View 1 (cartoon, rainbow, N blue to C red):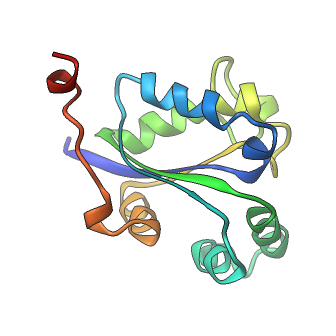
View 2 (spheres, rainbow, N blue to C red):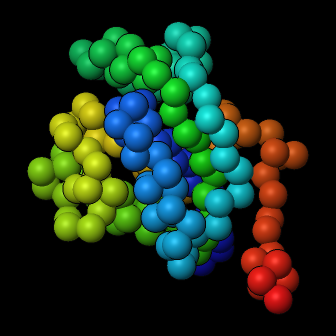
Length: 149
């Protein structure tokens, strides 16, 4: 399978609780992921509504948009083989109470709404979501073997 891109967001609840560094460290240490882009942002209404437009008709849309605007978050473009499914396994179930031990959501999420992280749900959406927050020129490929030599 080809390498995939996925978007990860460390959500405002995790940033507010000062867990962003620990979560980022988990991403850095994961053997399957390369972080190709990273930004600290504070979403405005237009950005949050545009990103979650797919949920516009759902009853939780306004609550989700308001939550994502409630504080800074960290957006990351991650790359790897089977990145989307590996990332979904890494972050755990949407409801932290049902997430596997050791996953990001189990460790740092407190509810379905405040579950610490977002992860792309398909390879197609992964690229779309990465492109929503990053220009191609923003993405870098770090050769850690060369740096650590």
